[in-house]
Image (cartoon, rainbow, N blue to C red; front, side, top):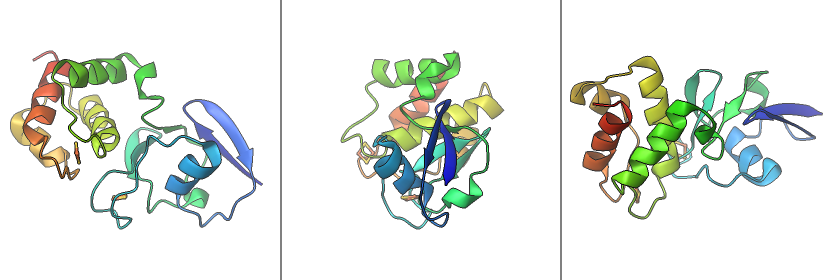
Length: 149
Ligand code: FES
Ligand code: FES
C-alpha cells in the first residue's frame, strides 16, 4: 500500500513503487494537468514540486517521493505566489496551445521562491522547459510581472 500527499490531500492506493510519479498523478489520483512530453527528463512538461523543489515527474519513481507534499498545477494557486504567477500568465496571455504551460508555471513559481526578483539572465538560466509554440518571451515577461517588476 502506498500513501502520497498531493496538493495537501492524502491518497492511499496499491501500486508498484517503480511507477513514475507522473502516471500516479494522472491515472491514480486523477489530476491530468501535469503533462507527458518526452519521458526522459528533457522537456519539463511533467514538472511538479515535491517539498520545496521541482522534479520531473516522468522520471521520479513513486517510491522516491517520500512524505513530502507534491504540488501540481491544480494546487499551485493555493499560495499567494502561485496565484500571482497564474494571474500574470492570464494577464499577458502566455499560453498558445498550452501543453507545456503547467510545467512552465511550476518552474516559474519555484524560481520566484528562490529568487524573488530575477533578472532576464536568471530567468533564462532557470527556465529550461521546452515550448514548441515559442512562448519564451511572454514567459519571461510574466515572471517579471509576478515578481512585481
Ligand atoms: S515528460 Fe518529463 S521532462 Fe519531458
Ligand atoms: S504553449 Fe504550446 S508547447 Fe508551449
